[in-house]
Image (cartoon, rainbow, N blue to C red; front, top):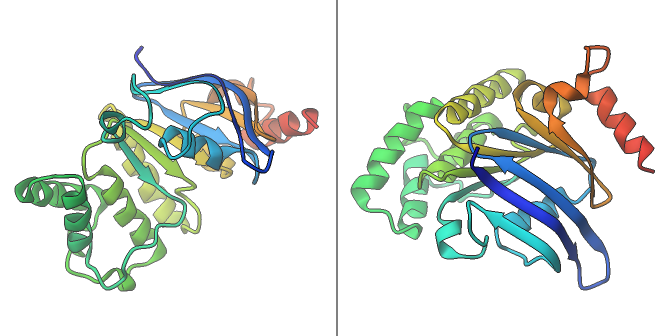
Length: 241
């Protein structure tokens, strides 16, 4: 299979000397949902910033979609949904996507076509003229997903996409992401929501204190069913201390 992300001995040290990531080696296959799991402060956000080309590694090699993350061609093929997306709340979702589409250099016709397509995908087709201030948390997450998908990226990076969502909104988001995987999108799912990762992810990696403790198929975390992902996760984290 084609590899969407390849890391070899990837490390990053902050100017204050704190090592946010050390010796990370893993690969993510094209068309899979990969769960990047770890407690707060594990290095997940550092890794995301490296994948997005917002920071350069201090050691090791990183390829995203076959190129360097900071290259314009690579960035143009990445969609990103942050944990907290702060948008101008007086905008409608149609206006929001028009703004971001213009930043991406998309034509007006392409923006309009993608807006309708994504609104239908996320169930927001009746809310195109509603100000974002009237959106619920779940609706704002779906609006953020529309923004991340607007330019039809090959790789989607999600930072805690289920945070603050009620069970119905979680189920809706899960269905959207599963459909995207069926369409061949690669999804990098960073989270500490273990139950969601267990349901959705093809493979997972467990990060702690900046180092990768375990990675492999999600089904291997539970083995014969005697353990679930949460028990295995806690065991891996505790063994590393």
